[in-house]
Structures are given as structure tokens and as C-alpha cells.
View 1 (cartoon, rainbow, N blue to C red):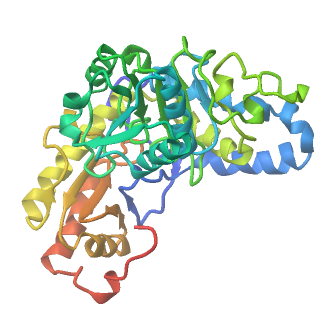
View 2: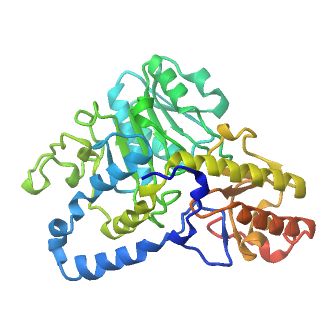
View 3: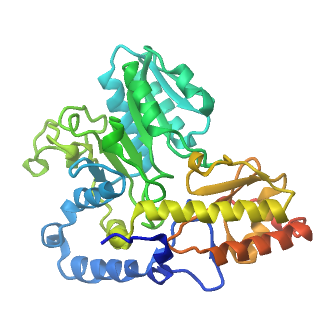
Length: 401
């Protein structure tokens, strides 16, 4: 049964987090759930090791993409049979956008915003180049999206929560505006799923995509997911007509015939080992309410903002002030943000950095509490007061920031 009060959070006992680490980066990569190692080991040693190829049937490997999709659907308000898991987020963005353009063949504008994650924009640019049909990617200020939705827009493609600032779009309002002008709506939930309440069915959007390695804790390289509104799932045209999206893949027909369901959005062989880890990670959510998660997240982030502004005046809040206008992360701007973050990480407080000057901190109530927040800010204060960031060893930029 769902937790009735956020006082039952956090659930640190369910995660493998070193005792000397304060982990404020779950918005980038979730920590290891305790059950994941055993689940993956069982998959490798028993399902693969002993069953060999029989695992596709006996261990249910072939059904994993849809089964996991249904579990994720419970967290984001999607009906059963409307989500499939597999491939990467970039691939799922491509699939959703290509299908959206097929639904509006006479329109040529793809509308997005400058706060969207770069891969979404890159995939749109690549699709436009491949199609060579005169499409245009129009990127506008996040605050002005509604001013640019008109009858020329084929698809509105937005990430609900801005990866840098944490600014949150109003999903319901923008989707309604897109539909009023006849456009297709695509939402990227990479920074939403497992962090904030989402109701895809109520929004009535056509497509949504997301990853599972952030707030869902599926691990590095965990597969992505795609949602298709049920009335469209048997009719849209898959741009990537992979073998496992075929209606009868083991009939080995020469021509492609898409499955008459969300299964048509499958492409290649599912990553079974990664899906085993994701399966274990999703067990954590069986008795957790996303409403409670959101309430606790706001409480933690508000406390963090108050403490940082009181003790670290060198930092400037780069996230919306009102909690209802942001996701489950808080960002601060600082000229030497990269170096300061490296100093923090060396002292056991893990956040991350996004160019040009953003220090990001994620608030994941599954394993963070107020004491963690206070301890993290105390370390940050020491770094800022003593200018510990001004050390040459923190100036060298790593490949992953």
C-alpha cells in the first residue's frame, strides 16, 4: 500500500550509498538499489548461465519491454499497454518526432525551446536533414513557447523540467494550446519520471519519452521508454522499423508489418541485463507515493535554498523561486561553479555542473533527509568562505562534468 505520509521517507536502507557520501546528483544518475546486484547476478548466473537461449521464453526476456513499461506507466499516469522500454532516449525522441510529423504531413515546423536537452534538438536536426522535406526546427525562449504555437506547427517537443535550471513547464496548459492549433504534443520526461507527479492520460498528449537512469535508479546505460496515446499506438508509422517491432518477428517475413500495439515502437533486441537492474530498481516504488515524494522534495529543496542564500552569498539562484515552478532539482550560478563543484565532490558532497556556470543539486527523498541537506550546505559554506575552489587541481575540466 502507498505510504500515507512523507514522514516515512527517506528509505536509505534500500540503496547502496557510501556512508561518507551526501548524494545530491540523483537527477543525473540514481544510486544503486540494494536488490539490483542480486537480480543482475541471478539473471547472469541462472537465467543466462543455465537456461542459455531458453531464457527468452522461460525467463520472460522477450516480454520485459512491455512489462517494465506498464510499471513505469503507473508512475506517470499512463494506461497499461501504452509504454514500451528499450533503446536509448535519443532513439525514442527520434521515433516520437518522426511519427508526429507523419501525423501532420502538411506542416513543417517543429517547435521546441532553448531549455530543451541538446540531444532532443540534435535528433530533430538529424531527422530534418534526413527527410529533406522543408521542415524547420524553431527554438524559442522557454517563457515564450505559448506565443509561437500556431497553425504552422506540426509538433511541439519539450522537456517538462529544464535540465539546467529545473524550470517546469505546465504540461496540461501547453498540451491544450498545442491541440487547439492542431499540433502534436511530445513531452520528454527525463527529469520528471520518479521526481514529480505526471498524468499523461489526463494531459492527452500524443507522445512522451524518458530515461530510467535518473530518478528511477535503473543504472548507467539503463534503457529509455516511449509512451504513445492508446488511440494512436496501432496506427502510427514507425520510422525505425526494427525486427522486434514487427507484428510477427519470428515469421521472418521479407516485408515490414508493424505490430498492432505499442510493440511497434520496439526496435532492436532488448538489453536484458540492464532491464534486470531496472526491474529491481522499480521494486522500490511498490509502496511509495509520488505525491509524498513531491512533498518531501519541495521541503528539502526549500530548506537548501534558504541555507545556501543565508551562508553562501556568492551563489545566485538559477532555478525558479516558487517550488511549484520547478522540478526536483535546484541550480545555483557561480562564476567558478565547475571548480567549486569539484571541491565539493572531493569532500563527499556529490552534485554536478552544467555549462556555463550552473551548479546543480538533485533532491531525491528516497534517500535524502534534512540532516543531509544541512551537512551539504555546511561543507559548501566552508568551500566558499575559504575560496577552496581557487585551487589549480579543481580547474582541470574532466570529460564528464
